[in-house]
Image (cartoon, rainbow, N blue to C red):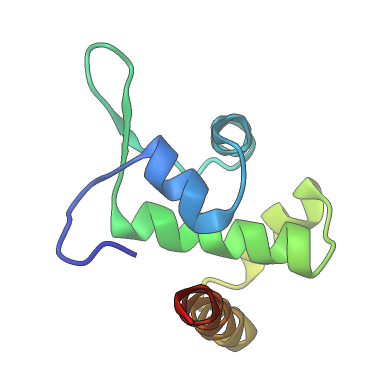
Length: 105
């Protein structure tokens, strides 16, 4: 992740999560708490709190296999971040680091 930025583009966020930008736009319609800021042209800007929510949605739908409705209910019932999500994030960062290290050898 890029350090020190306040806002991230949809492309940057999609790359972080490993999904297409269309998935992020779709999730925006499905999850009422997700609303990145948009400029006059409609370009989305994501804050860290938006990215944190997207990471939880991604974890619940892709890693846990919940439906969108199941993920909505989980987010509604449990406002605290899932510890497993933090572990998955750390492991994904480690995986990226190791892949980059292998490519540099």
